[in-house]
Amino acid sequence: MPSQSRKRIGVLIEEHFDQTEFRRFNEYFPQRGYEVEYMSALWGNASLRFGANPDNGQVEDHVVVSKEVAHADPKDYQGIIAIGAYAMDRLRYQVTVKKGQKNQAPAVEFLRKVMRTPGLKVGAICHSLWLFCADTELIRGRRVTCAHNILCDVENAGGEVVYEGDGTAELVVDGDLITGKHPAVVDRFMELFIREIERASAPQPGGR
Image 1 (cartoon, helix red, strand yellow):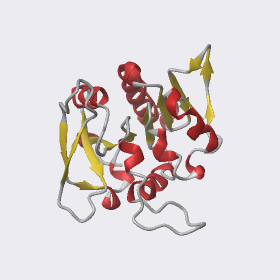
Image 2 (cartoon, rainbow, N blue to C red):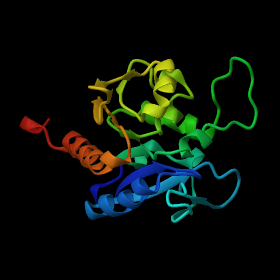
Image 3 (cartoon, rainbow, N blue to C red):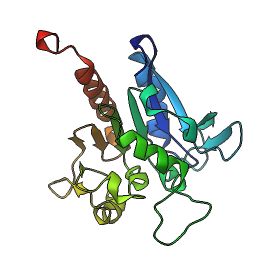
């Protein structure tokens, strides 16, 4: 992990990302001492410019990404978050496919590394579990929550969705995986995410 002087949260992003989450990530995390680094599959380009969902009839937010996800090292981050909306579906794209072959999309390959990194906090909110559904090994048996739109995808991939009343839970923690239902809970999601990071990094009693 990087030194505490440069604490970083990596955020997976693509076209059609959720603008509410994007705006709040850019405010909340830096205010608490965490640099936000956006990453994506750049397909051989030095950088790509992505737009948010047109929530008010037009695309109001854009981001220029120069971090190639295929070159990212999970150990360089305190946490990795998959942003919500349709961006994570786009990141599942594979140029070629073969019967029986696991998804080879760069972001999915990176997520496999992320999920194998002990102690690294991983966040998913709203539709972003779509990326995890690209490989059932990423989500099978994990307690999660998500937007109602993708319930069938998550459960078919083996995720154990937590329900509360007539809907899915707002927030769920399963080990290093923190999930949020939708953008309306983004502030609580971020607070929980940072709390989990800092709880894990806090000195243990007795110096252990």
